[in-house]
Length: 145
Image 1 (cartoon, rainbow, N blue to C red):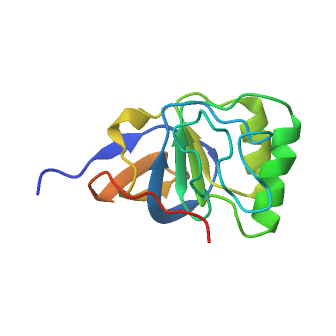
Image 2 (image 1 turned 120 degrees about the horizontal axis):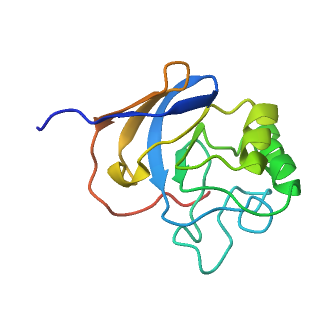
C-alpha cells in the first residue's frame, strides 16, 4: 500500500467524522438536484443521478442555485438523510448556510480530484485536514433504501 493521502483545506463548519466519500465532478443545487424526502440525487444529467447522499462525505466542486437550497440541506439533516460532511473546491454561500444550520462539518479549498467515490475518509474540519484511510476501487454506488 502506498503513502496515505492527506489533503488540507479550510474548515468552514467545525466537526469531525469518518465515512465513505461520494465524489462528483459537477456542482450541486440542493433545491432541484436532491430529493429532500429520500436524499437521492434526482437531476438526470448529474454524474451522481440516483445515488443517496445520506451518511457520505459529499465532495463536489461547489454549489449553485436558490437560497432555498440551504433549507433543503437542513431538512435532509432533520430527517436523517444528510451527508456526514461536505467538501468543496469553492464554498458557495448557499451550501455554507445550509451546513451551518444543519451542523454538517464543511471544508473548502480542497483538491477533490484526489478523492474517489468509495474511499474511506476522515474529515477533521477543526484542523482543515482530510485523510484517506482506505482507498476503494471505483464501482457500485450506494443507492437509497
